[in-house]
Image (cartoon, rainbow, N blue to C red; front, side, top):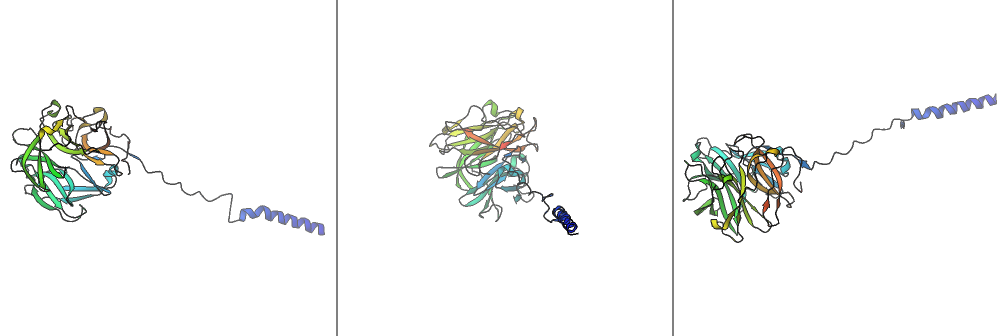
Amino acid sequence: MLQLRNITGLLLLFTVIIIAPFCSKNNTVNPPPPPPPPPPPAANTFTNPLLSGSDPWVIKKDEFYYYTHTLGNRVAIWKTKTMSKLNSAPITTIFSAAPGTPNSSNVWAPELHFLDGKWYVYYTAGSGPDDTQRMWVLENSNADPLAGTWVDKGRMFTTDADFWSIDGTVLEYNSNKYFLWSGRPNIAVQNQNIYIAKMTNAFTLEAPTIMITKPELSWETNGGPVNEGPQIIKNSGGKVFMVYSASGCWTDDYALGMLTLKDGGNPLLPADWTKNAQPVFAKQPSNNAFGPGHNAFFKSPNGTEDWIIYHANTNAGGGCGAARNIRIQKINWNTDGTPNLGIPVKTGTAVTIPAGE
């Protein structure tokens, strides 16, 4: 009998050993799921175009970029830390003129500048007819251009050149400020030249007005003789280059030309500027770039790279309309210190983001 009880006890013990693991709350047969994988690394490329638009301008102050382009009836600013993500930046309208005023129509090519501790917007506008187009300026003393009050400071003009004018920008050089723009002295003639005048302050010009370039080379006269959209870029040594748009924007041959100011030169002396014989940036049909022009320049977030921003059409025959779009790409410098803008990068191609983004 004792032997039978021992056998029975052993059978019970064996049953407990076999069954116990299956009753345990810490079931090792079905372990808990693994933690989710880490998110993928941030994308380090982008593709052009960034957004629809024309006549782009951008300025970097502190850690932010402030961007604007032609909207036709108002001035608005995009604010972002990353130019490669411009299309997701918030937009703030800062100015729209009252209907029927001399600056209420055809609001073109605004530029935002920070001068003497204040913000200024230079823009083109008129009352409607093309012959009323003139340069205008707004002022804001707030540290943030999206805050404070924008004050209309009136027209930017000189008494000796009070005629059709567009595309104003600023050159700071040797402790002086100069205003550059495209003008047409005879409204009956298409010929657009680029002029310069010294600034007595951020909203006042003084005579004389000097013409520093006119369309005279074959690639500057496609569709009509045009020099417009002057833009300043300086190399690391401070040498000044003025890049401008040439030929009619309504043609596929709209392109960028360049003037170089001689070392120690006087910006008001045409002889101190030298024009490149060939365009420095032109159409690239195989890259879906027709009529590339009206550019601006900016630095990468860490300040080590120079970039160009410009508009172009993706297809031939796009003209000066709504089909234009905004693109950016890195530029380089030649061994002689001149900027090398390269060729327009193909749309849809992966481009490495600006250094420091």
